[in-house]
Length: 382
Image (cartoon, rainbow, N blue to C red; front, side, top):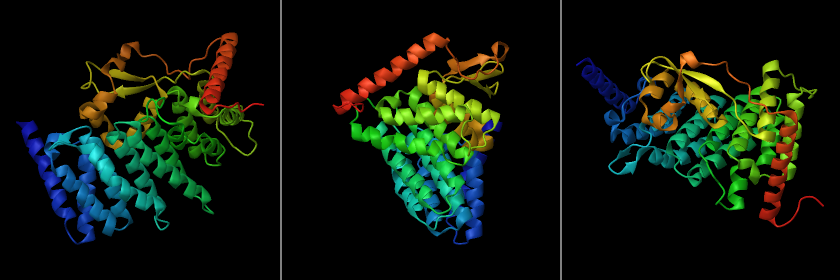
């Protein structure tokens, strides 16, 4: 009975939010948007939203058109949370999250292109784009427009006299997350692959003076290596990237003040670029999710990037979504959860024996070069 009362209360909250979002007074709309974000953050079951997801989305778009910075920031957050909440659910035969992605993209692109958009609004728009793409992508081509929009934001930020480190870092983090939705690109044309992953630009971002940007670029490269996307890069780009990573891992860049943790991070990225492998970290999961208290062992860079984004974006609602959101149930296999009694210290990336490691790295580099030459019909090396 208590669960039924809670269900009705949540349904009433969503209905009240929709009513407030129709108000002409901005203060009332902001209050409604605040309440909506809090409700979605705490997770609303899909069957309680049903067809109203479109009404919520429509009112958020209206707030973007006529709202001030704070209202727009909240509206972008609400749209991202809404897409993650509905996941792969359908309403009247419509794939809800994919529908949100297709309808939100033009609105997001407009904000990302507008020179008058403030840093807070830009960051909110980029986070929203990452969230709706994560929820709504079904095939690599679904993510392509989002990737293009993100790189447009990155290049415009770089061209500014005083680029915003917050915007640039948010854009690169969004790109790293979008890479996790791409999957296998083997059957796609070379032009498509090169547009999706501009390795030359990633190399430049590794040398950015802002630590958050460098780290996000490193995570993106780790995902590329793990998903075998580096095979689509030219040998020249790979050589430049490996050289920069080597300098960062050795703290040899005179103009970069790296912490010990950052140096270790870039050593991990250098390792995976040269030999494959992945980090091992652990994420505590509430006891209600599995039997007893358990630990979700994160075994891939792609999942680690996803979890880092979701923890930051969902904020206090992360645990609740992890328990109840079917979208995350699909992405997080319960077999990855282990009993806390079996918990082991977090690894720093597995390393192999010296001679074997060198032979394997050389073989991987040779295979990449052969793949590139066969694909382009000529050799980069004379």
